Image (cartoon, rainbow, N blue to C red; front, side, top):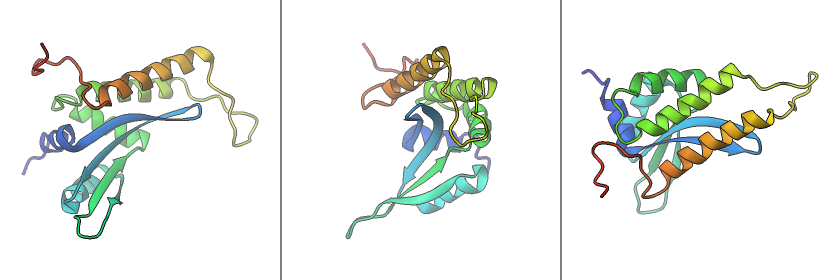
Length: 152
């Protein structure tokens, strides 16, 4: 079975493409939640990442989450999916912009310590703008202007 369009279609319906911000560190990630672990195992086997239980209450079905955040894997996956994504295409483009921007301008590390110097102000502004835009798209009710939109 050819799954080229199945994976991105599944993500369009059940997934989340976002940019996390922790202090001054920005990172792109992709998550898919579902009650069918087998479907998420297909994602993991094909693209990497990891699966965890995110919701488990007595008398309710277990909800699993697959997450892909390793930069090279995420970049390769989103690039391949762009032609197939409809609902999440703008989020994928923003996540790819972040990945490419950070690869082009690696974080300036300090003198061998684990703490690096902060990014220059103009770079932080660009990263914050990408974070703000993807957050607006992912907001409940937020969506990009795409051809299939019922917006009036």
